[in-house]
Amino acid sequence: MALLVICVIPAGFIMMNLPSGPAQDRFFDLHRSIGFLILCLAVVRVAVRILVPPPGRPDGLPLIQWRVAEAVHYALYVLILVMPVLGWLTSSAYGATVNVFGLFSLPNLVGKDEALSDLLGDWHQRLGILMTALLLLHMGAGLWHGIVQRDGVLSRMLPGLSRKAG
Image (tube, rainbow, N blue to C red; front, side, top):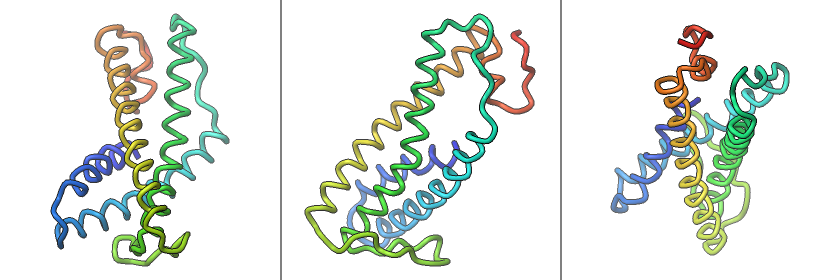
């Protein structure tokens, strides 16, 4: 999931800066397909998260850090659910069909409306920037805990690492 999100965000920025034409169209198709895959995986991930709650606050982690981490996690969950739907709505309002990896097409959620497409697209882009910032914060905090603090917090996110502080 993280790899898909890390790939789809730069692809979105690249496609918006390409000249109109076949290359941009391919980037749009790939971006939309990955977005839909992220949406499907996000629904499964949220269901699993509800059924299998994460471990509690690690010993020694200040409450304020725990609260900030929880807020970032919840914001990321909201964004991985909202962003693909917002993109799908934007494409629908633009009049573009969302074709998922050439396998099937999604139905349009709204009728063609250029003004609505522009508005939704602006919000999709703004939230993409927010998601990028939150991802960088999340990754930076994980590395800080793993490399500087060495408190075992990073190992909670990465399978196969020792759960003990080094």
